[in-house]
Image 1: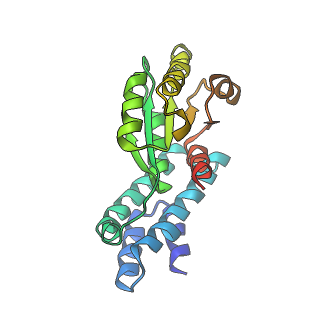
Image 2: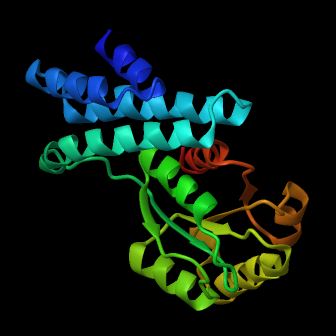
Length: 209
């Protein structure tokens, strides 16, 4: 089946073959929505699973995500014509005092690949900026990243500020980063913890289903 072949090409990081398959599927009458959901997003779910299990590594995941991004660009005009995917909005950023972004960027790519509308607000982000972005984008999920033990307290400060702003019940908050643990996530009142980008996307999807 054409969608299974797309998934295989995406997992193999074969961008050129994947682009040809997407264009051919469109010419043969497949809908952009079906290609996105059953071919591309399904493929990135496999990539996420393999990353989680240690069978794929970050360079391969980035190649797969780039291949998907280029295919989504082909589909975008058609998705917009049909109303597209009304996906949940995600706000992601690295907390105040922390300038690391590699992990955050990978999570953002995997979230986009999972069908979310991702708003990456950058690094060294204070709580009030997260709150403003949540309100502006009507976000359903917020991802907080910290790569330093010294900036982990900023995660709690951000969650506390979101609660005080009165919008805590409208968002699910995910936390992650090298020093972050499930126990810490529970202590600071986060809704979830993810050890890697694949599991972050999977957890986010479970929140909106």
